[in-house]
Length: 276
Ligand SMILES: Nc1ncnc2c1ncn2[C@@H]1O[C@H](COP(=O)(O)OP(=O)(O)OP(=O)(O)O)[C@@H](O)[C@H]1O
Image: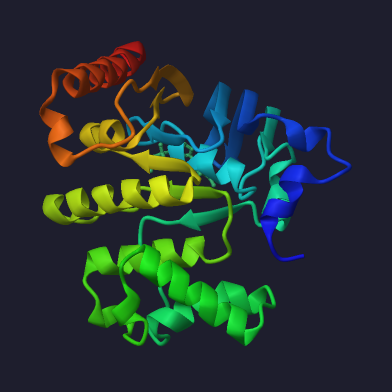
């Protein structure tokens, strides 16, 4: 079975009827390092509903990436529970419950954009015709239909990131995990990609977990903003955004937007003060 969606309505699954796509309870993760233990996540409680756009914001080292990696079963928590589509993260990974977009686009330079998107599909055993169909659909979603035959180095940084998003979307996972995907891009390109990402999210109704250092980006994109602070990494505030789903860029000048941005900033400050 190739499509992850089958797990949502499986017959055997009382578990799968759980309404939260991602649910963390008292999640803890301590890394054992040569310099002693590093408490990367402490008592993290968070529920993410289907179709939410959730941003994680906080200073360097507060555990944003670690939390995303736990969801993706790339790290094993040392305490608490975490479910993804009602399964363990490892089961969800095997069921292809999510796509992952990294900070660097991570495209293979010797493969065309099409061939980069095809790679996970090849590994998963899709037929050539299904690969082609999926590649065409995701290239259209990220507005790169005319660039499939190009190599990554022939594309701008923003286009490469869009190609990387297309690759993560190709096997149609319900969840998209994005770790600071636009951090290295200039403001104008980033604004444009933020707009496109919101459109894509509205069209596909994916659940998105998005790591960022930018307050405006978090507020512009999210239905829920999770503010974190370090040592140990923990959640200090969860803000449910009252902004409408349709968001032109100039919404960033409205009092409602600025009020949320203010609350995020206060949350970040409080986290820092805690460390002093
Ligand atoms: N594999 C690992 N081994 C040991 N320590 C680790 C490991 N991965 C992360 N850490 C530590 O865990 C803490 C949380 O790191 P993490 O990368 O999740 O933070 P972050 O909030 O994503 O930071 P940034 O914004 O800089 O990406 C940091 O102190 C980091 O040094």
